Image (tube, rainbow over all chains, first blue to last red; front, side, top):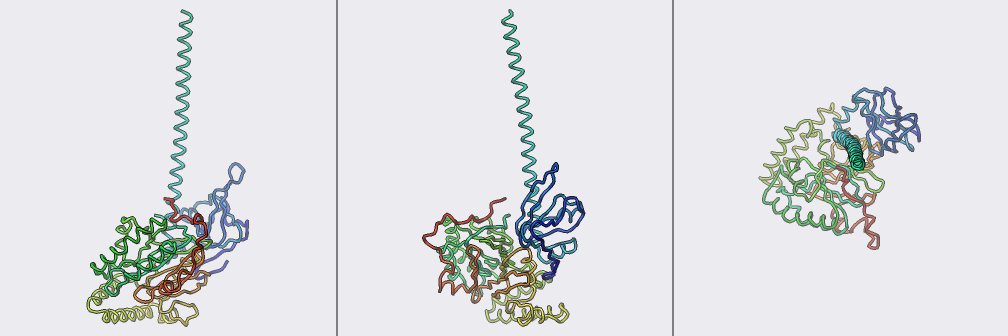
Length: 155
Length: 285
């Protein structure tokens, strides 16, 4: 760890873990150099959620809400990060207001993406219900037709 | 609002102050736009393109009437005009945006080649603008009155203004202003520029930017920051305006007049395939 012009910098080697899913650390990070791979364990398997490029911000949920880390962040290549804690976040926003703007942009983008996913899931659910009801209707009408045909043949 | 763009070729200039009675940049700015279009660059006006604070309406009307058709030509060539808002044109933000000929943004994160470059007017890092907005407005207003008297009188008022700011900084920094701002200090600053701008560039640049480009101070120059980022200031158009040319991650910095005299620092190979042009504004809503 070192300080460059009042900022705390942490460097990571390729594959090194920055934060681990479930742990209760409170920093957020800005990627100065390299990339960060965000992974999550789903049913015992590791799923890559995103690969974050230089300039990206991550870890803000743990800092803002004080909740355990929702995913694991791992360095891809030699990676350098600016570390921010609640106090230094406020200081950074005061010194560099565009940082707050970009943070809100990122969170706004995530909300929109989640909304899109929600709409997709809702639409898929509705479609499957529609398909099910259509299937049932078709089966019912075919059954009725068969029944009436059967009645006709008997009469 | 999209603030991240990918541009292979971009020319950046700031502080043209169209409409200000102190000078008439119309001819030079039109030549600059012609140069930009002919050499296949997109254009970024990095704040204070229009001077609404110290305005002569008839002059501005003439300037804009002459420039508008050229803004229109950018669209035809597939290039963009970006306008990052400065403190002298902040009230025109929506008006300029609604004209539809330029993308108006508070700042730009430019990706070109493997470089990340922040382009921003820089007034948000001006201690005087942030800490003493009323005083800043009063000085701007006095400047406006002084322009009405004569350019010489304005120069005199401007010089007085700078001395008062220097004295205020001297007081607020615990009598250490010189150590923070003059060119002989261990931390190099652009000549005649206050230390707050270098610090602002440092605070932004640390977030993974190779270069930070400001305007606002009307003092041109370039310095290397502690974080490895390069900080450029393109100065103003009242005297010897400078610009930054970007070509696929390569940067050139110099006077606009030498750009006219010596030509494009990154000439486009006429035989190159134009299909390698990278897209402009990131269209992610």
